[in-house]
Length: 335
Image (tube, rainbow, N blue to C red; front, top):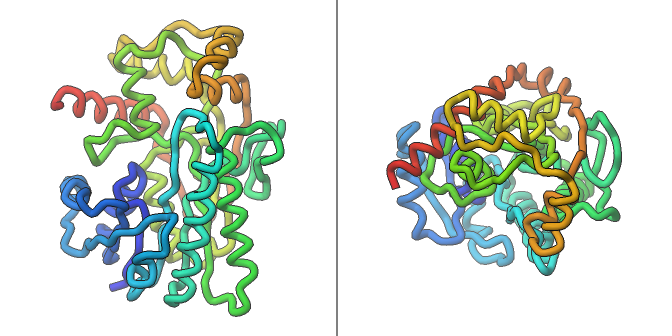
C-alpha cells in the first residue's frame, strides 16, 4: 500500500484530499501543528470513509523537528500547508516566510527520504496577478514586483522556489506537479467555518455583506481539487506540469450572490458596491485593501491541458455554490 504524507491535514482542501486518498486505497500520514486536533480531523474524515489507514505526525513549516521521521516510509508528498488569510498582514514576511521556507523544508526532507513525487498546492494567485493578461495559462506567473498583496506574493515565491529545487536536482529522481485552484467552494467535511472560503459563504448567506464589490472569481469545486491532487500522484504525464484547476470563465460576485438567492438564501446581497466606496474603506481596513487591489480584474483561464491530462469534467459551478451554502447552513444550525 503506497503511503502519502499530506501536510496541513486539518485544512479545508486537505480533508477532501485525505478522504479521496483513502478511498483510492492509499495509506495516509497527515501532519498537524497541534496533535490535539487529531480526533477532530478523524471525525471529519469518517463522514466519508474509514480512517483505518490514517495516521498523524506533528510538523511546523518553520522547524526541522519531526520532518525526517515523518517522511520515512512515504512514497508521495502532498504539500498543502501554507498560511492563508484574507486581510493584509502588517509584515508580508509573516506569510511569505512560512510559505517559502516550509515548501523548501518539505521538498528537502522528501528528497532525502526517497519520496518519488510531490504534488504541491499552488494557486491561480501565482499565475494571474500583477499583469493585465486576459487569458492566463500554465506558463504565466504573477509579477511579485507589482502591488499584488502578501498572500499572492507568498504563493508565487513559494512555487518558484519549489520549481528551482526540483530543476536543480543532480539526480532527477523526484518529480513534481503543481495544482492551481481558483476560489475553492463546495461542501465542508469539518465544522470549521473560520477558513477563508467558508467565511465568505457564511457572510453571504447570513447577510453580513452589505453588497457585492466588483470582484470576479474563477471557481472550482473542492471535490474536483481533491480528485486532481490524487490523480496527479499516479500520472506520469503530469510530471513537471502546472495544472490550472478552476473554471475557464470568471464569475462576478453579483452572479454568485444571485445563484444563492435563487437557491433560497435570500440574505445574499442584491446590490453592488461602487468602487470608490471600497477604496475608501480600504484606507481603514486591512481586509478591504485586498478587495480594493483586485477590483475589476477580469481574466479567463486556459484549462485545456488539465482537462486533457486528467480527463477532467468539472462539477457545475451552481452545484458547487449551493452545496457549500447548504453545508455552511447546516453547521450554523447545529452549533
